[in-house]
Length: 246
Ligand SMILES: Cc1cc2nc3c(=O)[nH]c(=O)nc-3n(C[C@H](O)[C@H](O)[C@H](O)COP(=O)(O)O)c2cc1C
Image (tube, rainbow, N blue to C red; front, top):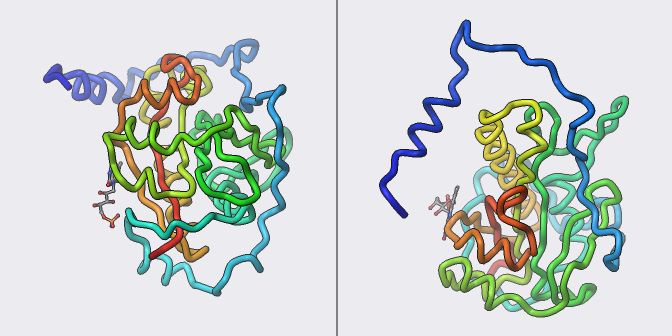
């Protein structure tokens, strides 16, 4: 960490100021692809989110009352249907209008810069390993096999909950998807998009009777290396651990 004022400078420089908006046109030939896919990975189809899987009926008000950061979990597996629901609720496709597949969470300009990866440490229907969420097909793509709970705990400043959680969400951004339209101001929107997704995850976890904690303290490039992404075009922004309440 250093004391350079790059954050304040960014905040100041990325302000919209009346009279200064240039209204540049969009270069449609250079629009980024909205979906990342791993074509050679082994793929697990997820079932459509099924509300009857939700153990108890709970109102949104009760969910707001119960949401809190949970950092200790039972050493029990998470179910594949629960994972499916959490993925759908946080960033799944919800409706299609024309050529746009809109999602459960808002995104500036519907450009959807956030990708979702999972570290699966305890799920009977899935091998241990690192997975990518294929949003278009509502499926999981396995990137690497193995138990990464210790590596991710280390990368997340040795926070113990990472060793206990059956599943860890990692959200990255593919910056160019948003910069194509919003240039440097895109960074504001990208972080806001990630916040929406994490908020939905935290609420959906309560709905399923699970616990979660959102985490931004980690060594970025150690997580990027685990995910095999370059940390420049695509880099990690945010993590969440999810597990079974004690
Ligand atoms: C952006 C962000 C980053 C956070 N990072 C961490 C973290 O690295 N470790 C942790 O234990 N909790 C983390 N938290 C959880 C907060 O500590 C927690 O939300 C706060 O103490 C309020 O408690 P509550 O969530 O139980 O209401 C983070 C929360 C947010 C929103």
